[in-house]
Amino acid sequence: MRHVFALVGSRGDVQPALAVALDLRRRGHEVVTGVAPNLVPLAVRLGLDAVPLGIDSAALLGSDLVRRDMRSAHPVRRVRALRAVASAGWDELRTGLAALLDDVGGADTVVTGLLGQEVAAAVAERRGLRMAALHYCPVRANGVVSPVSGVRGPRTTRAVWTLGERVRWGLTRRAENEQRAALGLGGTRVHLPTRLRDAGAVEVQAYDPALAPGLVDEWGPRRPLTGFLALDGAARARLGEAGSGADGGADASAGATAGLDAWLDGGEPPVYVGFGSMPVADPRALLAAVDAACAELGVRALVSAGWNDFSGADAGSNGAGSDGGARGAGRDPDRVRLVGAVDHAAVLPRCRAAVHHGGAGTTPAALRAGLPAVVGWYSADQPMWGDLLRGAGVGVARRASTLTQPGVLTRALAEVLDETTAARAAALGARLVPPDRAVAAAADAILGG
Image (cartoon, rainbow, N blue to C red; front, top):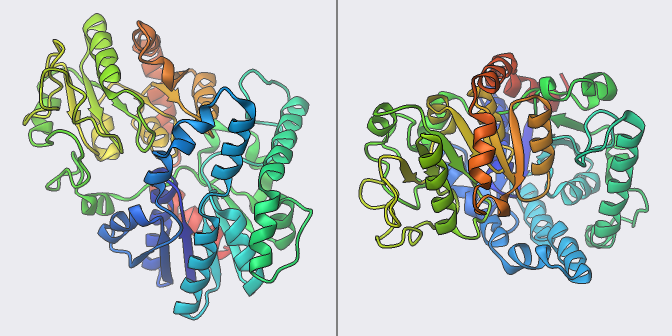
């Protein structure tokens, strides 16, 4: 069988799906992979023949549309920005996916993530193909997991989800029908969840049932909960990131990774701090907040720059310095170390807690490592993950923009750096579905097995 993956969004949106693509290929299936243009090198390093699809996700996340307009205090500007972001890159995705299918002579299945589902579903409908989607968090109406903090009870939870689906449909309906018209399909008044259900599409829930008890019974086999998806050790080594045992630092954008093992071994396990693809508004202020928290709590921190430029973040120095340590403004390089991208599966088990954005990649990596977490959320599913970790007793959540305010990060870390929370986090990590089983279950679901 031939499966065409149409994956757009950030690394957290794309990398888990690539693990499934690799598994399908190992089983002897033909896999064709289209990813956001900026993530083609990532897929190629994994050994996949990837082609660019859609728009550059790093450019979108760093744009004024996301960083300024979506956070505007003016409601009209904010709604316009939300509508624009919801359908950003749809034209490029439609034309690119259609061209990719033409180039390979068709497919049996179109596999997509959450982002771009509307376009991928329309292309699959137009060509009579099976459709499968990978969801990294609950996004369909249910009575178990609330999308809004503080909402309790099955009836109220379901009502909030239903309202959210209506809002989403209101934001995207015009753009979606424009895409359908461009494909020669008629317009629709029915939102995507209902159409996918009626088409028999499988929506793989690529997160762990331990964090969403009850969803397995509510959703059944069409929305199977497989566990969190992750690359195996051999695939991670091909990425060559810090801690992987390879040469390291292929994606590093700040600081050197040489000597990271020695630094990790040279003291108590540190707190990991990383926000992945999310734009850190003030890297210098974040480093200062991390350093202050470490000094007060008597801990070390490993700060990963992710997609951010920390090169000018250290006042009084030329960035992280040759040894990767945070310098300037009185910071101790032995206390706070700055690096680029790291291999989460290799590095996080050597840490004692994590400060992250609640993303689809970092959240499960920290959970599997048995780490309590401070979730500094930005938007989308991130506040939900913060609530789920708090409900499990293994984390706290704060808006990311508040973490640089005096004392906020220190107090949040103090809440999770205790033996009771650490024990709960370790116990939860041991209960999670192993990554190889999760990936295999997702592949089985795509194949209809």
